Image 1: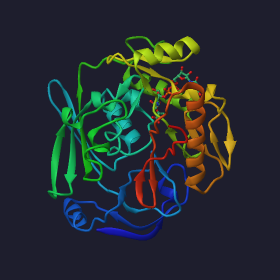
Image 2: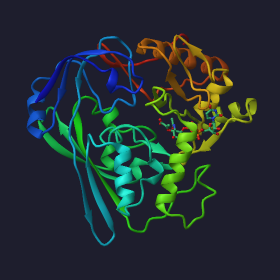
Image 3: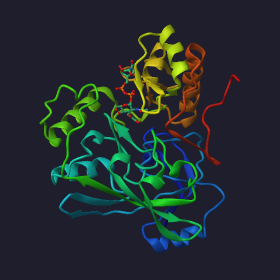
Image 4: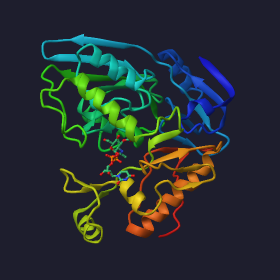
Length: 343
Ligand code: EPU
């Protein structure tokens, strides 16, 4: 198995901060994974393309960087089964499917990151979530040292959540994700910005529109280092939402089937006065306040400090506790980013 020692992860995290890992394992086969299972230290972090990870300290823990590639497609009367290995690039997979007339992922275009990372936080955008199309996840179990299949139900998907982030965290590693796309495709045009497209629009046209919207709103991590939405949109219970709405009638809100109401964290951050805020070479993006950006800093600690400022300001103004979507990795492994300054 390929390994790297004293390796700088600056090129492997989209915040482009420097952090040195003592050892990086790059498994690329099942036998590498079996070898790795016997070598695992007490703390380690599995890194995909690093688009949703904040390396907080200048030292990183042991890193596992899977290198599994390949895409296969099977057609049947009803649709297509597409299996993609974990280290394939997500957006390339979306483009590949659409170019072959396999529709469904178009709303999820341009989400940075790898295929293997996508089920972990059940990526979603413009009214579609990965969970709607993911039929199976192949996962290597470090204890049993074998591959296991998870059905969609077993993945326990919800908004930016799955079993891989919780019960199975660090107990194994995703090697492949399988999707099923029906031939009875209909566009999902529910989200603002897509709702003016005609209902007979092609998947390619939806894809183009999603790319256009994302490029106009979200900073390109290759140009201005960032990790997309830094926090999740909070889910409030009905009573809390009614109270918030009374005080702030303009708050963008999305009622959920569960009875909860999702509110826009970007709006909360903006109304807390932080849109465009900058300190220590990092800041809150000027067009989309949910995105924290790195202008000139080399240290994840500056972004961590900023995230805590955002959390505290939003809590002071709205009494809402934001939850980071980005995963925070310290020299000792993954941990909570927010240091509560209130009860
Ligand atoms: N808003 C503001 N000010 C801001 C940002 C947003 O007022 O600075 C308002 C917008 O005007 C809109 C509402 O908040 O009324 C929602 O904004 P937007 O449509 O930009 O989406 P979002 O809720 O901020 C979520 C996802 C994005 C995804 C978009 C589109 C989360 C945490 N984020 O953002 O995902 O692209 O919807 O579906 O759910 C990501 O996860 O990295 C990501 C970019």
